[in-house]
Image 1 (cartoon, one colour):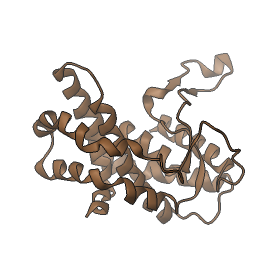
Image 2: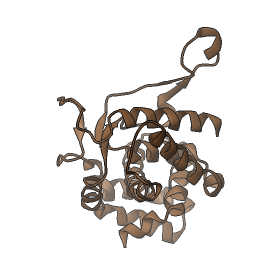
Image 3: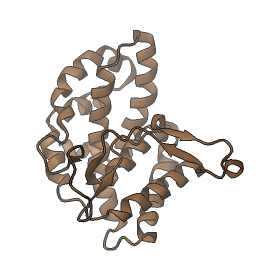
Length: 225
């Protein structure tokens, strides 16, 4: 909890600096939320779902699988919703595997954590980075206890760094859309993994299981109905 709180507080500080997107310089490498390329990984959702279905049928309920199938038509829904959200500079792939912790920050006088892999930086809603991180970081058995308090930590970080006019209700609204998009991206990523079935099953159970629990917690699957 302490590590997640620190990361989300620092993430909010970065997002607040560029909040609104007006001061972000134009570049050739950042994906913009307003371009047609945003969210294109969802285009192959049905194909990736089919690859993973034998594993899904072992691990998830019929209702959960049906909800995963509905993500196939989510790209246009998400893009339309995301264009109305405040834009900022996002990491684009902000999850635990891209974060290195310094075991001796006080002795080395360096930051406690280093964030790696900035090759998919995005101009879009800050809730995207929050959803990507929490989808994996919060174990499904602790979702009800930890998810909302950590979302509130991020929101307090925004307000503490000068963001105005963005309520916790707006953040939760934006989080619901981005958490569902993150789940679709995870299906895309897992569908491309070349592991032995037993190893992939363990990854799906832990990683996707956590993400599904988070989406269910904020009732984001209702957006597909």
